Image (cartoon, rainbow, N blue to C red):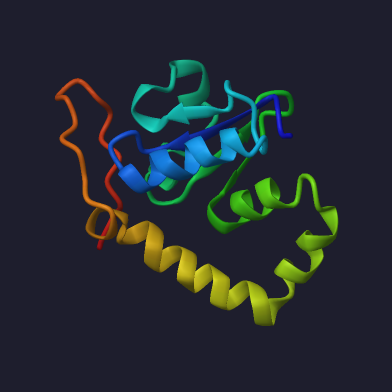
Length: 130
């Protein structure tokens, strides 16, 4: 189980909420790890590339202050219990197609899964294009 991290998800994206809840239920992350992009505090916005986090899931290590994004954050999550899976997923002939699939899904998440209306006071979490 990954702890001492923050996984930023779009709280208005049903698909994002489902995978965040699934990661928690499967014991991949603790209950404090999932954080809505729209509500994350100033302490994290200063250390995370918030524009990039609109387009790619951000996994922020609260101990070291480092952040990984997108497919790399997903690989990090999935390899916590099965460290052997990380190396094959990083091979270029596997990583490149997965990266393209990830980008297609993440940039089109509002089309694929719909979108709940965001209150005006929320930080906007829209992909650059879809």
